[in-house]
Image (cartoon, rainbow, N blue to C red; front, side, top):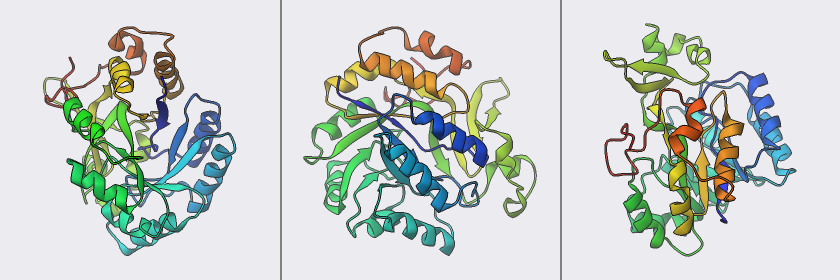
Length: 295
């Protein structure tokens, strides 16, 4: 199987020491592509742009493809200024998570169309390819049938990347959900999201994990798990499988997906990955169902 594994950007607000230690370990993990940077909230500045570049250079020296990711929600001039710095770098490709980034990247820096850009038809894929995209990450709400249709009709040379494990990025807001949960204003949040290295669970009255609160972002309550679809994805020629980092178990999760790609294991997806998702999983979007469903 020729598909590559990709590690998505860290979606949570971790301290600098944890981020640096995490990527020191990533250097030896069985993952070919690593996305770096802050994609959720511009206030989270545990690392400077120069420090992100330093991590990128260290990972690149180990043979990994490094991609710098951009914010999905731009709210201020300072956000545009940082976006411009990322898009103007001449060392690494960029993951564009907003159409403003694609306009800046039209200057010639190769880029990946991130999961937050709405790609629902062949015409959009063609436009992004014309602008310089060499890979597109399918939006998480697309069904497997729709992804297969678009993948088969994508422009020549455009790779397809599928989100196969992790809490799904559902929505963004100008308001901060974590600050609101603590009854404080967004501007006085005191970085409450740092207290939740895997997000803040939001439960229904029936004690079902409905969502995960992550600052200005809402994620799925349960992680998506498409381990049992890996062989199907590879059979249709999908080039990249994306896994989202979490505070515990990311190395083991990557190892399991690598073992499936290498044909070393072929078992029940729910049982194999259950230690790192004790509440269960979801795969509803893939099946054209409600996203939170597992079947």
